[in-house]
Image (cartoon, rainbow, N blue to C red; front, side):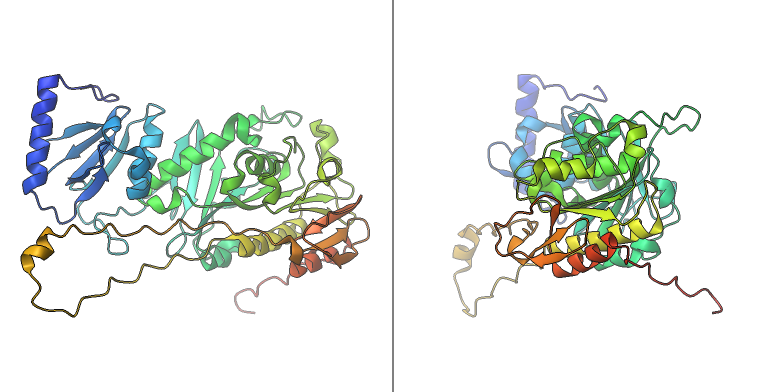
Length: 458
């Protein structure tokens, strides 16, 4: 049998296989069964799922049983996404021709830890860096660090002019560093990337296509999230909303372009000291809160040969109800500095606070009947009702009626008169009072860095 494809069985073999499956389903009682819905609407219990291939999955119907191929078209793929996001993530990857190890049920390694009472839930494997899981997607290395507890979102760190942003985080451990406290407060998985940077051949004038989500990086990022979900055995991250922290040429462009490309996945974004903001906003992307922070005397865009800078973005699109903020650093220059990065981080935290979905609590237990002596046969014959699945958490909308209008050159702010009010020339929208206070200080040159943490022995 091919390692990449699962062939259709001959008709007689298919009949024998289906008959065997029916018998196994009738007589097997699998305590930790993995239940999937077939294309005919019937639910099927599997003792284990070993791997996913281009044609389908390799499964065991009972412990120690033979491996049986089940083609994807034999499954209800719409139901699969809700029933087992891990297997669905593997299915998405097999469409690219990949063979993915799943190792659920009987195939889970011995000593596998259990998460939240779920049997055979794999834990994050050891990667090159402690605490980080890594995969390759389209020639790019992606690295993920999970928060403590159930993740509620993904924070994509996209820093730098080149493609190696992991160097800014390689010493970061969960709960430490500039993102540590915030990461665990909102239970955000940190995601970053690195690829092919070579200082000897680096061309400062040439923008890599990775900065444009619709050209290259968008699908790579989503595929990487799927691969990471399979690798660490945690389906929760597959559909999580994403916040993006982007700086410099590649990172800022990626933050902006990904928001235009897939606005329904983005909670919020910042783009600091960058350019190449080429994509026009849509009705959907205009609703995503973004901050474009730049220096009053920025000139790198001239070296980069890009005219699509923050000032032009707002001049061209301020007639739309953008939930975006134009933040010009007073006397700021092109280089990233601690001040602009601290401002961007603090603003992004506030935006995530506004947008992150509420925590999903477990459904209350079914009320037990106090009646005794019910007919046991009737209870056995009674078809159990399918529990209603809660809707997935939704990203919260920005309430523009609570926003402010700021004058970019002077730092003056005023409360909006109505949710429909749009900024005038040279003005910008600001979502909240707290953000408007930070913005005012930033554009007036009064924003200050916090004091450094005390050193050991002080």
